[in-house]
Amino acid sequence: VLPAIMAPAAGPPARAIGAFRVLPMSAGLTVGMVHADDAADAVVRVLQQGAVGAFNLAAATPVTSAMVAEALGARWVETPARVVRLLMQAAWHARLQPVSPGWLDLGYAAPALDSSRAEHELGWASSIDAMDVLRETLDGMGEASAGFTAVLRQRTVLSELSELLSRGPVSQRRQS
Image (cartoon, rainbow, N blue to C red):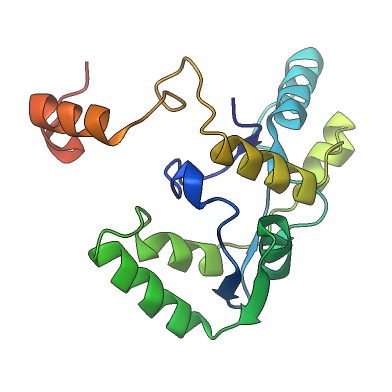
């Protein structure tokens, strides 16, 4: 199973992981990440202590564009956000990649996660840094790892097409 809690669930095909030689991204993009083991530790602490309310959970240092490039073994080329968005939008409309440019907009607009409440009230701290979470996630994507839950199920072009034809588009399906 993939070790990180992150969105979106869809990503590049497994064969594309590690094929990136150049990564055009803005310096302003940062993403908080937490390993599933660290999130599970926080949940256990909440239950044991009877804590209430929401807790933000993230490794101490967020993932940056430079870190993504390093993890992919690519050279990072700092590129203005509007240019990255245009490239992403063109690739999405051409169906070359499955992620809507809205996810990029969200990444730029989302505030940094502050885990200090979890640290102070639960005694929680991430034990796995964001770079290790990113590397483990990319390894899982590269190996096309899958699990037994709906979100982590093995996907193929044929199975996705079959589901589309039998159940229709996601936007028109009824919840069971």
